[in-house]
Length: 237
Length: 295
Image (cartoon, rainbow over all chains, first blue to last red; front, side, top):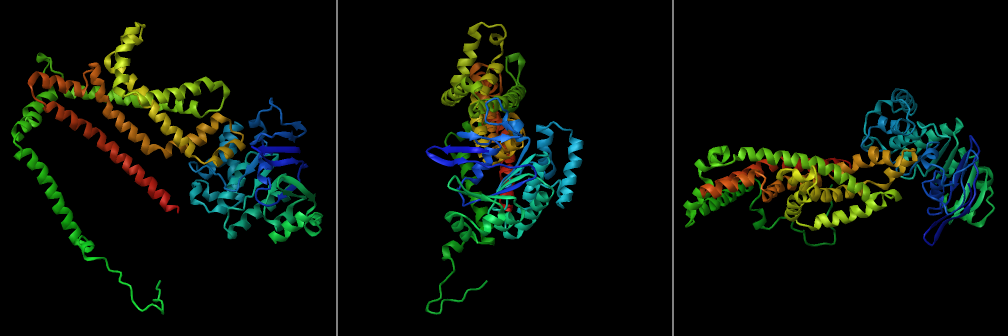
């Protein structure tokens, strides 16, 4: 993403932000609420149209009217703060919907994959439960598995632990750590600084729609270069 | 849990309800409800039996002989049986309800879609709901029932009154149901749309697989309410001369100077709508229980 600008009315939510992700890389976006982290993620999978700048995936310019956003999104998974599981479908159907309806893959084939994924997160026996019956942490892990079932090239995670009970945060972060170790490419907006320090290859600090500072976690957390980064890190600690 | 009285307060508060509010508690409550029921029923019965015109009234509206005659009809005197009329009402509302669901959905879809291709449909759908909710059903019925035959079109102009009735009911109720469905669609949280679209589902699949199933579930009570109303409004088709239950009753009273047929028609509509009403109540209660259970 390069020089991304997003305006809501008069308000510039993103004022020319550029970030780059390489394959197998994990980049964490940190910053106060309203700094533009979520908007940046939504611009990445074209849920928001951008007012200026470029979004590229595999070297292809995505800001082009000839691009079909649905085809792009099939390569980019997204997980939300509020889980957004489909309440009228059971866990398994939630996972199957994308691969079967969007990718037109055969149900049997996807089903065995989905069950394997559920087994990995220890929820295979809950495959036929409805989302309401699951705890927040379980729901969020199902939501992550739902986007993994699409076999995405890039996973976008939008403050996925912010709506969780503190006791349930761990199980979700553990799953994300696993994914990071397996080389999943991820762009993560988060308030969990210790997690960012552990898994990120790059940490990006956003403030009021501006990319203030970017660097390895070691550099950014121990030796922040900017006043506002220092202030922010002090406040979250 | 127990809270000790504030050390500094000198007076212990009194939590007993005042005497007049303690009257109907427990066993006394049962007695009270029995007495009030008996009183109400007696009052209504008195109205029928003690009123100066009570006897005439009972004969005109509740004559057993006429109730039966109106029910079975008499072809030799040109009297249509109410039991045949009922069949007309039933197929009219069943057919209308299916059509209303379909057109209501289409109109709602047009109104919420943002596709430029649908622009003229969107404007049309908005105008349509405005007009159809504004015009009284009986007028729509008369305009359709007497207007379409005058157009002298091949198939459209040669239909029976009952068919024009179904067309009018569908036209009117589609507008209402479209608004109900639209409200249902807006009641689905925005996150559902975001989640579906970010899975790469197209707009149409998102609507069909994610939004509509939830939207319809949210509006089942108001939807059934409209259907109950539609069932009763099949009576209005009588203005077009279709021999449905009300028209048959009117013919009976005009011939035999006895209104018992109308009573019978009223009973039919009650018997028809009560199961639907109870069903709606049960759905609402179930939905409420489900929501409360999750809080």
